[in-house]
Amino acid sequence: MTSPTGYTGAELERAGTPCGPHDMIVVTDNVKEFVRMSGIRVENWL
Image 1 (tube, rainbow, N blue to C red):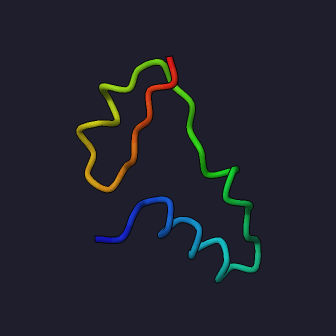
Image 2: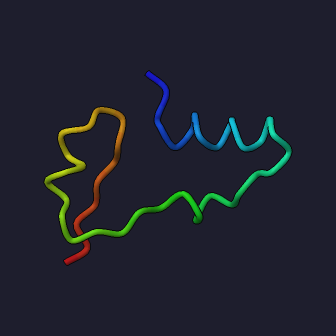
């Protein structure tokens, strides 16, 4: 399975408008919404 971040990054690259790897990071205090998504890596920093 391709990760959503990888897919989105590839789409931007093909369009000629790439973004840096750190621009593909989402910060949230509601990790329960993301842990149920396959392909998403979740880290709790709290």
